[in-house]
Each structure stands twice: as structure tokens, then as C-alpha cells.
Length: 211
Image 1 (cartoon, helix red, strand yellow):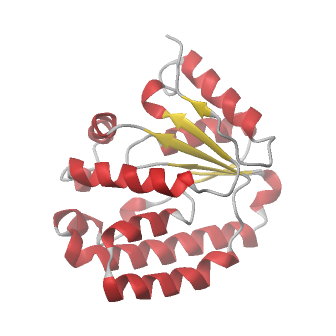
Image 2 (cartoon, one colour; image 1 turned 90 degrees about the vertical axis):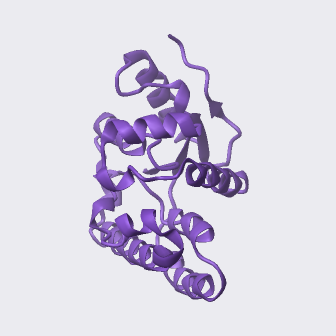
Image 3 (tube, helix red, strand yellow; image 1 turned 45 degrees about the horizontal axis):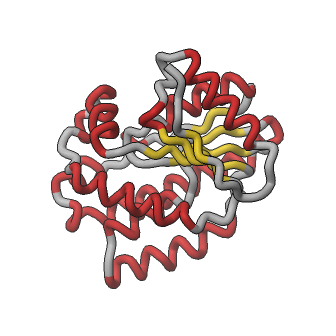
């Protein structure tokens, strides 16, 4: 199985991936966000540094996901905290006109070369939850994130997954503490494992957690 966990900044993708990787004995594939040299400048001036950020991420993510295929790690199962299409979601927000046209040309040549996930888990959360979790993990370059940017990011994610053609599980992540609450963790992991057996898009929405 190739399972991807997606969602906006700070929603808890990496934490859930680590849990799923341990439970399923799968290879853990984590994005190295800190390696992008333009990211801190982007949060200060998105219009000026948007193209630099997106092209760096596009090529970095493509190389990383390509190496997984070449090493045949999918034979043992992979859990990843990002999908390649994530880059297009962000680019649709951050780029426009000629820059976006150039980006789309690059993306259209790279995307077909990568394997699609067997299951995508979309973690949703409102902006206050995202801000609290971002502050908790303490990345210096994320301190200046505009709440309005997170709000628009949520909208773009919702729109993308509204028409997502693959096997999809939507989790209201603000209702769950799968890091510190064992029962919450059990519910989320059980839903992921059950949904991974399906081969069609489902309307399943996980969002009511027990105390």
C-alpha cells in the first residue's frame, strides 16, 4: 500500500504518518521542508518569492518520490506526509500569470511519471487549530504566517479534494489528538486501515471523537 496523508500547514500530517508507519511496518517518507532556502523570505514577501519557493518544492518533491519508485520501496509499503499534487495546490494560490503558466508546464511533464496513492487521508482543521499546532512545533520561519493565508489554503484544499478522483478518507483533525490520546489514535488508525481496503472514492468523514 502507498498511503499519503495530506492537509494544510500544521494540521498533524507527520505525526499521523509516524504512527501509521509504525503500525503497518511501512517505509516512512517525510518531506524536508527546512531545506527550501526561499521559504523564510516567502513568508515575509509571498509575491516576490512565490515562484522560487514553488519550483524548488516541485523539483525536490519529484526527486524524492521518484527515488522511492526506483528503490522499489513500495513493495514493503510507504506512508508519506505529502502528495505530489500538494505542490500544485500551493502554486495555484501563490503564482499567477506567466509564472503560473511556466509552473504548470513543468508540473504537467513531471506528474505523470509518479505513482498515485492507494489511499489519501485528508486532515482538515480550522485556522485556530492550525495556528496552535504551528506554534507548538516552534519552527522559526513559520512564526510570521498570516492567518488569512491559512484560511485561503484551507479553501484551496477543500476545493481540490471535492473533486479528488482517488480513494479518499477525510478526517476532521481538530477533533482528534492522536498523539496524546490513545482512544483517538485507535479510532483514526482503525479508520485508515479499514478505508485502505477500498478501491473507490468514499464519502467517509471521520470527525466525532470520543473523550
